[in-house]
Length: 289
Length: 326
Image 1 (spheres, each protein chain N blue to C red):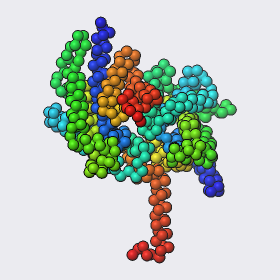
Image 2 (image 1 turned 120 degrees about the vertical axis):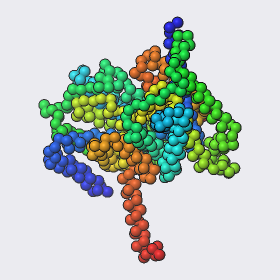
Image 3 (image 1 turned 45 degrees about the vertical axis):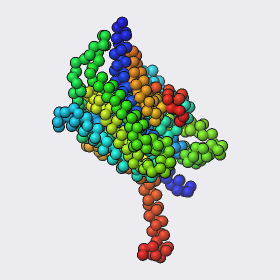
Image 4 (image 1 turned 180 degrees about the horizontal axis):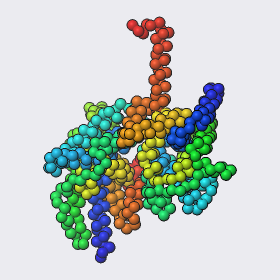
């Protein structure tokens, strides 16, 4: 009976982390679909979202305002990053683009360290700290916020891509940029939009998770890499795959942490990543490479 | 060409000798030793990135494997340092072989991510396998090399050893690049499909060069362990892999001698910046971005290209008798 309660507990904390990985994975997927670029700076957007929301909260203690402020700041950073770092590239080979976005990640992280310093910051939970009991397992209200808002964001995103004209234009660009241009869709604008959108998703993920983990300048790297692992696991560019990959990765990590050893927690995601890359690089739901 | 190359070797040898004779400051000699160790790493990574066009974002892992094999074998099992170095090479290259077979089938981002993931796993294991590696606080008391009863434990003696190795590795790499294998590598870099259609076994070639560069990294790692007599996981993390990529980028893609320069510049820079330690990361990131955006073949190459362009432009203007000036 105790084991069951433990498992439930691991499942919940895994799903919570997994939801954040899913948001990050979706961000990777959106940019990949629009540009075939993997933006290694995506994880830093998560960190920037969390820390700037905290700064806004210190200015004026209102959580909704902090949320909006954090997301807006990061959208600007995402757009500027695309404009300054990726548009002027002379030889857009994967090798150069990898190095540029990795450099961008390192630069953003370094600047964040200069601005916020090396201490850890906290943001209050969205609605109190009193745990809820589910049998013998406890759930923090924040876990429910993370799961609920992530589900909402994913639904809104899916509706945006399926139902709105701009969303359909972005999908058209992802299928075939030249054909999209022929029917009057500006691919450059769509690329910009994809960077803004994925920055917003990353920032939202960061702000949702930060009441549970504390925010620090170096929190983004690991989250970003795990989000990328989730994207690969689900199938790069597939949005259902990204969500599934994120949740699976979160639960696997949490179970391994609880049942095997907490020290190797971070290794689990990368172990899964290597196994997927070596055995099925197109991921669980990806059709072909 | 040949005399030019000969001159470079002569210059390197003379500079080393001059440094050995004139520098009487342990700090400077140690700094030069670290430049040497980093050069070994960067030459290897450059063979992989610059010549073969394959990226590794986890190269610090092979460096760490070499260092920890040497460290563990000599401290826990009392193995002779020279033998430990050889075993370090074996561990490094064997791991690269096993990882390389599946990883090098991947291209671009997938390969980058696989090497990155591998690097992080090694880093975590170094931290967590405490009974072997000493965990985050590291492994101390690693013995120095000794040669015919003479312990190589002063910066000056180590300088001789390390730079001899650097000279050997540079010579070996320059030869490799000019060999049949080197030409096949460059073909692979330009177009994998074209190289394959000309009969280059691209899979095997990539694996060879991957193992080769891991071998250099393990050698550097073992030298590092026996130079510093202390190792900790912090030296072998993701950030160090990124620093190595930065060194390649500064020195220039596909440039053996540029690797020496890249290693030197980026080893000295943090020492100069020691006052602004926090700026180091920002500067590394900025270098990576700016150089890759505007000079995708690396800083030195990029500057040379611009210089040659200018020269051609100036010559062009002279030969047309100033017509273009109007």
